[in-house]
Image (tube, rainbow, N blue to C red; front, side, top):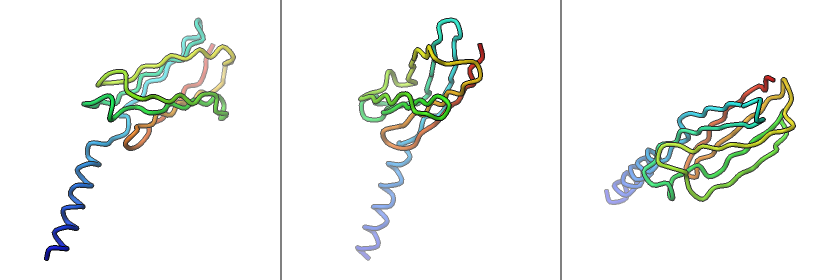
Length: 115
C-alpha cells in the first residue's frame, strides 16, 4: 500500500506544479508604419516575475528568423511589452513573433505589414 500512496502523491505534486506553469495567455502585435516599429504586448499573469516569466521572444520576417531575445525576468506581474525597429519591412511582409514561458508553453502572433 505504501508504494501506491507514493505514486499518487507524486502524481498530485506534478499536476499541481503544472497548474501554476502556463503559456502566455494573449499576444497583441502591431506595426507603426511611420516609425517602422513593431510593438508586442504579451499577457502572462504571474506572481513572481523572477521565477515564472517570458524567457524568450523570437521574431521572423517572411519565415526567416531575424531575432532571438532572451530574458531573465518578466517586466511586471501582468505582461511583457517590447518594441523593435524593423526598418527593412516592406508592404506585404509577414512578421511572426513567438513568446516562450520559462516554465511551460508558448504563444505566437503574426502581422502583415501594410504601408
